[in-house]
Image (spheres, helix red, strand yellow):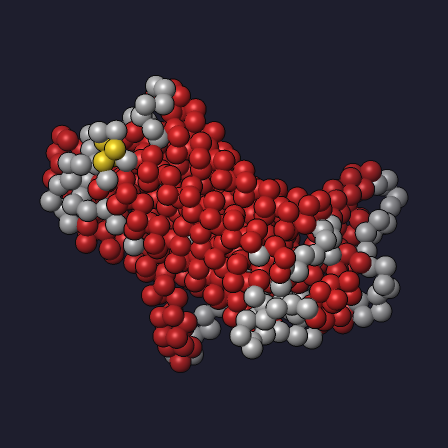
Length: 522
């Protein structure tokens, strides 16, 4: 296929000696990468599952500050991948980037765990250690996020596309498995095990720290088996350079200069025409991304506002990770084929808009539960002690989780696959950066509302639902004017391009980055 033409010959020597798993075309090295990913995701979600309650019950912050800091941390975790991708592509290569940033990650976990030991200093010391730990964790988890799955994809020979595709499915399963297990185990370690006369946060954060150490050791253990590609330059930097040059050139133009069809064509003096056309395609998709942060603003409250809501009921469980495992096959094999049978043209953009409505409905359901809980608690409503749960059954939270997970399947997975179909292969990393930014900004929205709005909880949920419906209408209008393209048309347009047009070869390693994207939804 098309990919084979851009394989670098120096790597071909290493391919022949690649060890394979039991007579298959799977390199042995991917076993190390999958175990590494499972342990890393376990460590991340295990730690994150406790954050809101840790802030509230251990650092004694109120619910608004706890929510704000939780979302500030989440936001940082989605800004840093762009940094990680640039370091890997322009400087260190994926292998070294994963190792160095994993070390930073482990240090962050250790500092965070020490901050959860009551006898280490006073509350100020605990806050300083916790914040320092979280910044390092955000740097680590975000920095390696774009590298690990692409590095796994690099291990396959180009002709083994089917094996590579299956690897990404297994990789995504390991993300889910790590998430499900850790969100079950770490809350038990916190609540059921007592140390220092209270909930054992030190142990609950210590276990993820150990898992991250194991993740790093496993990754290093496979070192001799990996196929390591040298850094090949970062396409994101080329894209920014091209846009910057076009803007600057357009400002400098004299009145006598002939007009150009598109503002990006002002970069033609310095950049290849093909790159300019590719960037035009990407920008059309990125415009569609503008309304998307609002969806993430609602989605990511599962770990903050919804967790706090659950503590006032008679049990606290995390449903999303379970439901996603059930819903993905139900939608793929049941819901979408049925809609197809009804002769409805359910385009990707329509699916995304529907996903937004589902998320808004989830917050309507959350509002009803909130009003119920509030009425039962009466004046006690704002004490929100983790221990003094009332008689409202946790089962009342199931509808809101089911609705938001259905929304996630329709919005997030479809959004990624749509983005991929609408952009050239070497621009996938640019779209990935854009997608991660929508998650980051979504968390910033919650941070602002939690700290600034000072509404009662049920009213805040209504506000978010209303905002998402409004954003959904704006998104639908933009989507209505979007025309679907086929990036392969570029190959026909530029068949005679000279070989100096190397930019199109810069990110051969894009290799189905969809799991990395999916990694963001978790």
